[in-house]
Length: 304
Image 1 (cartoon, one colour):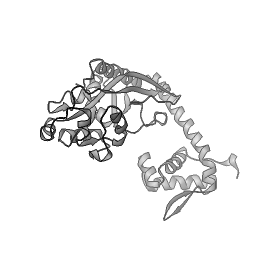
Image 2 (cartoon, rainbow, N blue to C red):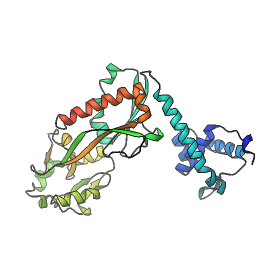
Image 3 (tube, rainbow, N blue to C red):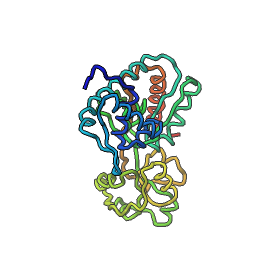
């Protein structure tokens, strides 16, 4: 192979990397916001430029060839370098306009971010915010988001994080549900009630067991990976759920299952890539979120 003669389009490499990551042309097309035939043509063009076959197509799907496996890590290195170049260039921009993507859990995105971000329309009307409501750990280093609100501190060296404080959560249920089944008097009584779970309901079992509530997997009669849906299930009277105190205490139709039950605390981290801290539009949104979210923590976790 004559490597000095090779010339190819960077979009072809992006198509190849996205296909490997997603496992299909259709998945790559969805991520790249293009069409499946376009992805196929780009990979075909890359194969022609390199003079090798990178993927084999069959009824069982796509499989990397030996050449594809050999070149994959080199292309990933190229992709990381291109991403860093993009971030550095973006970081040098001082134009207070353009899009900023903020990601947080669906419940936080629905209940908190609309109020926190409202002043931005007066202070920087040129900034367009895209809220990515997701419980997934978005990869900031790959620019899936510019700013993330997380409940765990990231450990990637290229990310900077600011601890804004700790939100508190407690056990809540709809008043009409407790009217129907009776109000518990002890933590052990709580374990006899129905529960509404979130993304991974059984993860709640260990801390509740430590707090004297011996719930079982079958206690979770309803659950949803979407926090907003889980909250609506609680309001509809399906059972007990661990929810933010700021949300539960503010709803007149919801009450704490045990008034003296201790709170669970979960931290709130505001995270961005270090290169983006020099971007004026990213910095404006980052600082606004830091002020707004910290204020809500100081006010006793009230969302409103």
